Image (cartoon, rainbow, N blue to C red; front, side):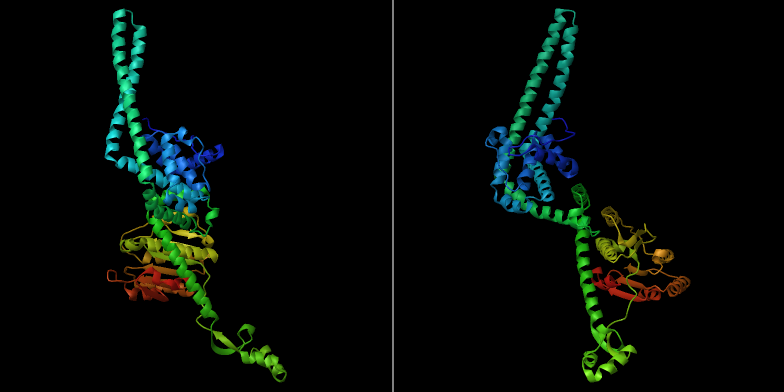
Length: 497
């Protein structure tokens, strides 16, 4: 069979409108994974796309209805879809897929891939496929030779030559007939195989792929909304593009899951900080009404003490609660120096998700953020104004990683360079590492002098375990606060910087 350059859904056994067929053909253009699966299937079996188109419709439509003469339209297509509709696994999964275009397409892709795999895995089908390919080559050559011989018969000047060419033509006509018979037999064998799959394996195919399909959609939603965009605002064609990227880069699904976990930690930490900030602790004097002691409020209510209260209140001498904890500048720009040395390879998805979670917080708080990846040298510096990043920005960032040794000086110097920009002149630095590096006394003195002059803070997160040792003394020399953790999930305090 010739290789298909395009595929089309043009025959259905359902009561389906031309608009709905056209919609699936639009989806074929939008979703490369769906198109590739159908093209692969058409190489094996003519009409494969119609089976997958009907499969999509069966899962997407709320109540798919077969045509009264469905079995007469295409026996193979009818057997497959009829067995699908009565399958218990289909009935259960259909409750989730109906009306959900993305989930229905992902299901159709999975069904197509599994159907192709089931056909190819059959030893009989492997042999059958080889025979069919040979028959197709013989057929093409025979057709070519018949055409050439027809030309020679017409050009022949003697009856003897004409008869000779006619005998040769007859031989190739027999070969063409045998090749067509072999191809027809192969197609019939394929139809029997598909019927067997539809009767025996459909439930297993759906059951085995439900989790994969669900996780793929979850990853598409998570990756597509890592920039805090609602999935409903992500065009369907972009969702299909994400499905393709997730299929090609499995680590994206891991990053997406981790971003969700870090966001949960961040939300919890911010709520805790708010609660602690509002907590009443020590007593001082002032005139902030919301912090007045109950006794002072009582003084205001009672006639004999009201004048004294008003006098003391006007002079900021009334008793008020202090709020717990040290006030931090906060809410300014953030510069993240993220270690991407070889020792961080095992947790590179964690480090990417950690940065993206901080980025989403920065977006909500309208804070500028810069990310400086470093190892032996500094990688590409990413600057996001007001935390704004596109999904493509995040995909590119998630797929990059430096590797190599560890150099503290270069990322810290780059941090100072960024701090000189007006948008980052009141930024704080977050430095994350699991390795050690030498810093000269001269550089440390210059860094700390600039820190004092610019009045910024540097918080360091150091990852320590049995395999990695960080020289805390060096980190302490340029940091205002050092947080030692075994994994980044323990560094939740940075989400309230």
